[in-house]
Length: 428
Image 1 (cartoon, one colour):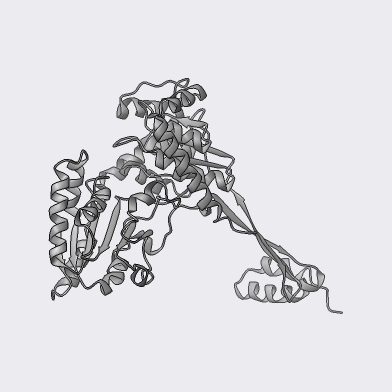
Image 2 (cartoon, helix red, strand yellow):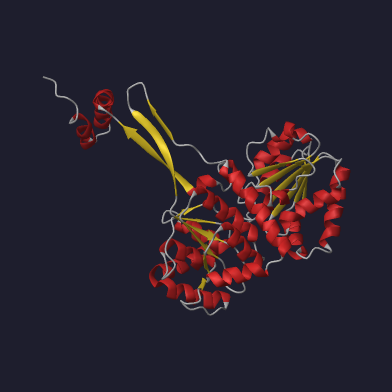
């Protein structure tokens, strides 16, 4: 864990070096991923099953690669009533939140008499990647599949690494209306969704987080299919004053550190004594946390405490452009309203980031690795597309046609110009 003092003369240089540190995957991941994609492209399901045998140590056949409706039903039934209730509660809130994002079609006639507008239509088929390595993630199913369902996507195909499918994951799939689930993971699963592999039909877009190989596969396949984003290790910034309980803030920092040894947790506070108390609370919690090994590595290698006036925190947050930021204070809006770059903002002492991970209703698939500078979190907009509508009559074309021909001639495109001028009434 690094400590930074905003008043130090070398703060800017040291802080920039910290932000520039690589937390991604080694270079050989991309090369290995390229081989997998090429093999699946040419070998189809046989290649997918071969990689599943080699990487996951699971023997699958064309008959067992798909999870049956009976397996989904039985698995969901094994989920405890308490967790099923929480899944239904979360799904309802996610559905309500994303339903409000639905944009309206538009149509109007402008001053030239041209009918203009746009319409929104859902994607036909979407693939949802649900990780299964470090833990089971029913929340990932809900956050990806429910917005797609709200958007009106016709087909939602879920892939998840083979092995025992956790009851909570199957319960979430059932709640989200997902009936197509394939027992494949890693880069081979992404390739199967992009190219198709036997019974796995190709999709138009792939969403959902995964490991370094999944991310590398999505990067390489963008253009063959759409992707939501290139997910990196999780991040949180907590801006907190001295009036917080240090143990609460420690828990918030560890809530992201436990995801991955490469995750990043940063505290910004103006009180050195409070910072020391938080550090002590983190150390104490790490002794008993079941995910303590990963969390300790994350905090040791990528964590930071920044001592700075709170009024400077919006600019610091913008420089970090984090996935999540909490403003744990009495009146957080005065500072949070000045933040431009963040995936999600959590306001007040009683709004930990974990609420957003599960039940707030907002989406937890958010930009990482400073991508919040130019990207938003997953939303209904990832599952719909806008089509422009244009209609001219004789009068409006008479206004637009000559200008079209002039610009086309200026660009050296005579067929474009002809396409417009040929429709204009000839001058007698």
